[in-house]
Length: 555
Image (cartoon, rainbow, N blue to C red):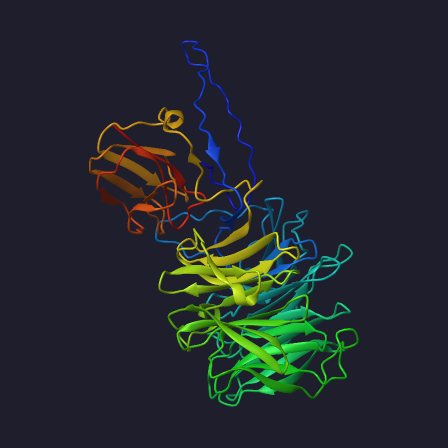
């Protein structure tokens, strides 16, 4: 059984302590189960942040050493009547805010890009967040995504869409705190997101931040690029949307290529488009947008919802998106030469969804050309992932623990050793991250390790009847072992004391489902048919990394 790992303490050493009985009895030896953490490539989900309502609008960026940085919104959690809020630790930035978390050597660092309220004197939060009082007014419904880029110096640059426009911060330099600057001002502020799309940020060869976004505030729609100027940000319109009459603003993606900066966007009446600077611009010399951009159709007659894009080391551009025709597609190539591949059949997203409710896809490539694509699948209400040695060799990857997840984002280390998939978990209002990589040395495993022999685990618990019980509280089970008699029907009295969904599911050692209890946010009783003798495992399908244990069936 793996202990639950709180979001603010990502590693905890658990010491076994013998306590003498009153009669002076000696400590007995606890039985130890031999477990296997698996080998080869595994997808391992974990809770990255779970205090308050955190994780919406998330984005992933990798530094040159393969360390992932995730930007996302933090909102005040809406509690059920009578519920007691969990206080945020002093070392954790408060909410509402734009948060940043990063992971290295299985340790999560929690900081922020910008906060509404400054820290207590003497407390220094990671990434030197800016203090921006405008953040007091952000809600899940009037914001529209974040994006993050990491400079060669390791400093994160973050951008987000709020009700009053688009903001940008860097991670602070020379010990100084960041300053939040207004890239685009919307006045009066929006009551609901939609007119300003999810922004994108990239750094040019000189380290200058560029920000791109789509705006439909004028009714027709335009794609804009902004760079720092002498008096704030200089904004250049690089394309107009031909068929947008009051349509929601979609995603925009900035790409640093050999041609300089390129901008990918979706035009509802045309398809997925790419705007490119004149040939005079280059990645090495361009530091400001030019006034004239050329546009090219990348994929025709597709909606381009949830657009994401990246550039491979060889210069290939990769774009993932929902077509609106029942599929997720991946288009690859370069200006003048594009090829498209269907990644998966899906239920189409709502084209009128706005802000953080908009479905997202994600695409990433390592230095060898291996490609990964992620998306939300409504049919299974989970996050999906496909990976392969190239764009033409994608294959599905099992993603346990993503049930109830939305808004996936993706990043991959340059050497391809780890792929990081982040998503927002709706039921727990938390940020979750799955790592696809070698299971060797990973300290958090999912599913929970399975004992190799019944004889070693039978002493942990054994059947006492057909009436079993287990409680869920604070995203944890109160038992690490359940047992039932072989070949006899039994019931599990499940007392869910959390204000969100859990369940109890039973799996065999090959991850075959033996029983799945329906998700519930209240107490219930599950009735299970008889199972053959054996050693199995149980888990909550929404939180398999922190809620799991051994299930023993014996005669």
